[in-house]
Length: 540
Ligand code: NA7
Image (cartoon, rainbow, N blue to C red):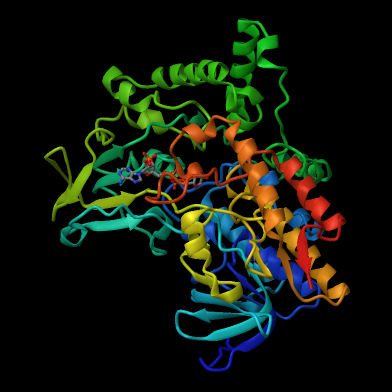
C-alpha cells in the first residue's frame, strides 16, 4: 500500500474503513466486491485488530473456533482447519493474515496509520479523514470498524516515570515479546485478560504479585485439540452453525436451552449446572439458565455453585476469601474462561494482594506501593482493560453535521441507532459501536459479520436508488435507546460496576454498553430497518 496524499488535497474514495481487524477486513472485502473504491486504515503494523494488539502470554479466544470465523467463503471454510477448540492468539492472527492474503485485501489497507480527525462536510456531503501524519482522504461513507475493546485504559498511578523496570499494557504488548523468565513480575488487573496472563506466566517467573481489585467467577476452559480428522467432524456442522449463530442469544451455536430453573428440583438444578460446568465453555453463562441474568435469588444460587467450585481449588482459606467473588452476582460481568488460574495461587512464588480497600498508591523506582508496602518488581503488566464500545471513536475527533462532536455527545450521553448509526452523523457507520450486542454480549465473529452485512446492504440500497446520504432520525434513535434501556434495566447487569456499564472509566456516562435483548432479536430489528427501506432514517 504505497499511495499517500499530500496534506492539502484529499485523495477521493467511495468509502473509508477504519480498522483492519475481523470487522474491517470483511467490510473492505464486501464494499470492494460491490465495486466501491475503498481504503482501510489501521494504526497497527499488521492486520488482525484485537488479535494483532493483544499478543500477551496466554492470549486466547473464549469462543469456539468453529464459530469464531468468517462464513462468506466456502473455499476459506474448507481450507482452514482450527487446531484447538479455543485457539491461541498466534493461530487467530495467522488466520486473519491468511484471509487478508487470500482475498488480496492488503493492497487497499494503509497500516501504521492512525486517523486523528473525521469531519463531515455539510456542503459536499462527504467525510474527510485526516491521519496523525496529516494525510487527508475524502469519501461518501465512513465505516468505523475500530473495535469495541481497542482503546486501552492505563491507570494514572503516580511515579511511573521513576520506575526502573518495564511497564507493559496487555493490549500494547511488544511485537518482539517480553522475556519474563526468572523475573519479579506484577500483574494489575484480574479480568479475562489478567487471568490468561497470570495462569500462563506463573510457572516461569521468579515471583508473581497479583494486584486484584475485583474477584472473578471464571469457568474452567475445556480446550480440546483437533487433528484433521477430528476437525472434519466440526466442518460437517458448518451449514447448521452458520445459520444458527444468528438466532441464538449470544451468537454461539448453543442457546439457553434449559427448562425454567424453578420447574426443576434442587437435585435436577445441580445436575444441570454440573453438566454445563463440564462443557468448559461460556455455555455455563449464556447457554444455561436464562434466569441467571434477571432473577436475583436464582442468580445467588448459581453464584454459590460457582463460589464453591472456586473455593475447592484454593489451598489457603485466606487467599480463597479474596479470590472468591461476593460483591456481585455471577454473570453480571464478562465471565472469563480459565485454565489453571485459581491453582496458580497455590504456588509458592505467587502472592495475591487485595487492592480493593487499599488501592495501589504509586510507582517507586523499584516497583509498586500498596498500603505503605513496596513490592519490588522487574516488570509491571497492566491488564487494566479498555474504554469499551465508545473509546476508539471518541478518541478520534469525529464531527458530524454543523461540526457536532461525537466525543462531546458521548461524554454526556451514549446514544446510537441499533449501534450502527448516530443521529447527527450522516453516512457514518459504527460497526461494534455502543448499544448493539457486538459491544459485549456476542460471539464477536457472528455480530461483526452481521453488522458489516447490514452496512453493506444499506450502501448498496443507496446506490441502487441514487441516494447519497442516510442518517437516523432523532425519533428513531430515541426509540432504540428507550428499548435498549428497558431491556438493560430489567437485568442484573446494571447493578455491577465493570466495563459493561462504563464504570471502569472515570466520568463515563452509565449505560449498559451492549444491547442485551439477544442476537436473534437484534438481527430482527436490523432486518426490519432494511426490509422497510430504512423507515426512521432520513434518506436523501
Ligand atoms: P477488564 O475486564 O476491564 O479488566 C480490567 C481489570 O483491571 C479489572 O480487574 C480491574 O478491576 C482492573 N483494574 C483497572 N484499573 C485498576 C486499578 N487502578 N487498580 C487495580 N486494578 C485495576 O479488562 P480485560 O482486558 O481483562 O478484559 C476486557 C475484555 O476483553 C473481556 O471482558 C473480554 O471480552 C475480552 P475492577 O474490575 O475495575 O475493580
